[in-house]
Amino acid sequence: MSAVSVPPAATPGARPATSSSTFKRLQARLRGLVGKAIEDFRMIEDGDRVMVCLSGGKDSYTLLDVLLSLQRSAPIRFELVAVNLDQKQPGFPEQVLPEYLTALGVPFHVIEQDTYRVVKRVIPAGRTMCGLCSRLRRGALYRYAAENGITKVALGHHRDDIVETLFLNMFFGGRMKTMPPKLLSEDGRHIVIRPMAYVPEREIERYARARQFPIIPCTLCGSQQHLQRVTVKQMLTDWEREFPGRTEAIFSALGNVTTSHLADPQAFDFAGLEARRVAALADLQRASTAGVDGADAAATPIAAGREPWEES
Image 1 (cartoon, rainbow, N blue to C red):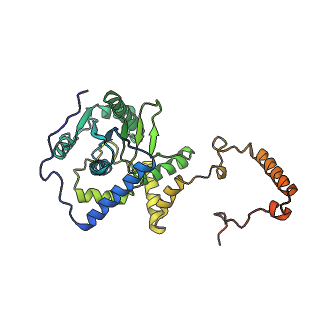
Image 2 (tube, one colour):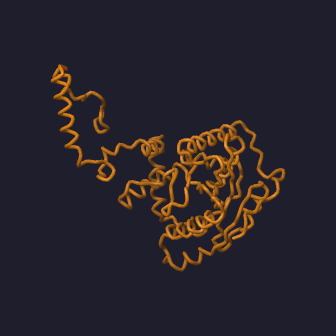
Image 3 (spheres, rainbow, N blue to C red):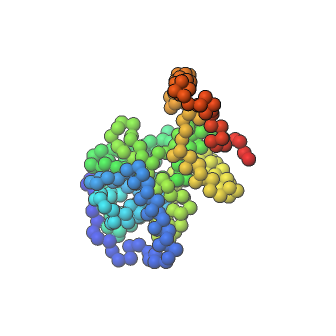
């Protein structure tokens, strides 16, 4: 693979004018949400070399744009390198990203790997292509990261992607898991970060329209309307329309987990509850012997709160 291309300084007019107060508020909100995610999960640290995976879609464009903005004002020093995987899809406008990144003055590299023909050959017509495509893409990006001193791999997944993935795993995989904001790869060699984990998709759509990013549609799988993710996205859209704020509440629940009220014996020691009960009774007995009022010592705080199924 060739070295990273370091283009000349950005040319005037590389980005559209976005001086309205509405856009500035939106930009400040995205900067705040991305900055909070980076801080909460310690995504980027001093001296990091961050690879921003750029697909040509609204999410990755927005991620790069916001990270560049934060880089200019961050109290730490870190590098950004934009990397695109050219999968050799027929009709792919291969000049769009290099021209955009050159005008922007961002170091970048394009990996060329014909995963398109591999996916089309292996996956039968009408079947979902995303699984194999994503594995091949991930392998190429990880390989580049390992060969070029990358310390963090940044992906453009947002809050809605994370919530959708939760339901996909629940409905179709029988697992309660999703995309974490920060992840160590299976081989332990790479840290993957999702700085837009707190950002709603609708705000990314507004930002991308304002920035007038040169969007490149995915012709390989973007039109597969039968995808399970499409069904889940529509379900969440309907919920959000009927109950505004529901998606945000679901996402908040991912960071507020009570393992003792779920059903995974590997996540919580259910077998040890009897020992804890015996220990609690022993503590009560000692308290009673020490002169604490028996009624108070044995009281159960049933008024401490209502369970979620106990509607008023």
